[in-house]
Amino acid sequence: QVQLAESGGGLVQPGGSLRLSCAASGATSGFSLSYYAVGWFRQVPGKERERVSCTSTSDYGANYEDSVKGRFFLSRDSDKNTVYLQMNDLKPEDTAIYYCAAVYLPLRSCLFVVSYDYWGQGTQVTVSS
Figure 1: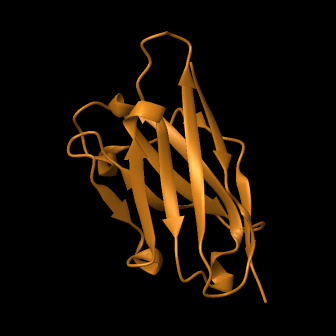
Figure 2: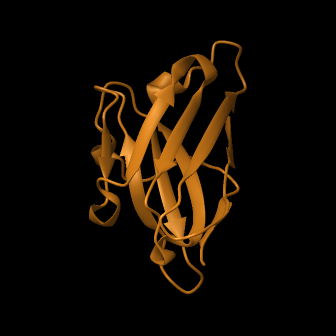
């Protein structure tokens, strides 16, 4: 069992920045998020949830949805079992609840993920002047 906890959301003006954190913990003492693909998703009420970014365990690289490329940057801190989403140049259309999710997927690209097994509770991001 893996628990995920997002933090870092809030209200920011257009053009501003936020950094979201996704802290993971596991039931076993040897738990390591390094073996898990992690995705960041967002959802606006009445719309489908969309994947914003994901990070693989094959090369620990990241993939991004087109609308956030060049503005959002995902990174991992393996020592802290935490994945971050740095969001720059935020736009009103980025307003949503942001969720992180994880699935055990060693040495594979996150693009192969069909479904994620573990989800956080979400954090609200509001971009407004």
